[in-house]
Image (cartoon, rainbow, N blue to C red; front, side, top):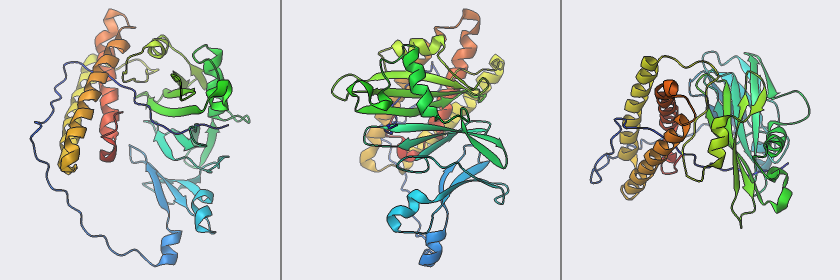
Length: 336
């Protein structure tokens, strides 16, 4: 099984929110670069764990403890641990994966910290998706089932069977030289994971399919929203539909307003620390993000009855804004 690692920009929506772009002639503040203390002795540095990921809630981090051996093999063969931030003594060894690397290159924790989705680079043009379930503080398993099939092995055939893809490009069917599984979003109630599959031959138009994994039913899903999203030719942002009933309109508005303020602060911070020649790029990328957000919003609310549209609009805006706020400053020039 092979697939390639890639972020496919999904783009999104909002309406008349109070987000404002800074003037194009604004100068950034100089960023500080304090000198770093000398690293510890070589032997200690080699054994020091590398932090691969910290969950958005800050509840845990994922660390790599390098194995002893040649430098070229050490990182790939090391042990990966999920470590409690509050109590570092609580450590769970993550299940080893088969392939070029025994662990993922990126991780995405669900809002409730119970699920972790990882993306792993494989051969050129391909990437795999892996899902882990934290059963409790001391136990973790590979999801969705205990059978000898990975998340990636199951999600591609599901989309082909549903008619959303013509072939299993992850398995190089149909002369495919690209088969990418990428993360899109978690629903705010952690009930659904939204991933994007894209593949085909790079010399022709690639096929794209958005699909859910429902953590409550432990099954893949295509909803009316995803079917419409899969048919659109426009570049739009997407969100994951929650399983639980939506909060009240007032609660959703408060959540969105808070996130919108955070986004303005984050944008100001990114501009302040950007190189002068990169500021126009950051601004243009953010303008594109807003455009695609607006288009995504229109598509999302179009499938719901009139009585739900305002709640769904606020939920969508809050979800995609939260994802933008969580994007690292280094990645702001790459639209999400």
